Length: 189
Image (cartoon, rainbow, N blue to C red; front, side, top):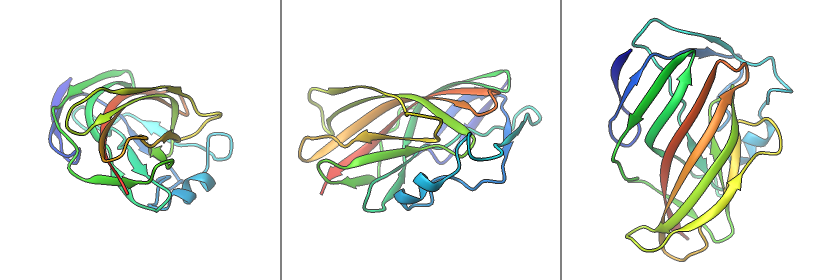
């Protein structure tokens, strides 16, 4: 095992990892257009990815993209990772707040998307006012079939909210599993 600093999560995330690399003929599911994810291949409609484990010290933790019907896409800020990637344990925590807001209207569905090859099993969501206050808890959400994305409700409260979620996923070929906690800054528009 090795320690690696990962950039691009809105800060640094220190993780202890050895992971795996995915190659696929399919593009990343989210292209910035939320409607494009609906047409993306799923496990039952594509050849699926081929997983290979790289040499120690190389790692790919899938990013979680969040999008709304208006087309805006932001990267969720990962605060915790727990995974088994190609037989190796991946763990890490970071104390980071989102710095880029996702503009959502009341009633919008927020689509959380992983790279092709990952299947969302379940997501658990809470939201609270961005600067403190009591939290709302949403019942766990499970996709109706194999999918690299799942939709969650936008917070109903007016103003800025901090939406936190735990997303559980597996790879199509069963080589890896992922438990990632992340957050989004939601601004009602």
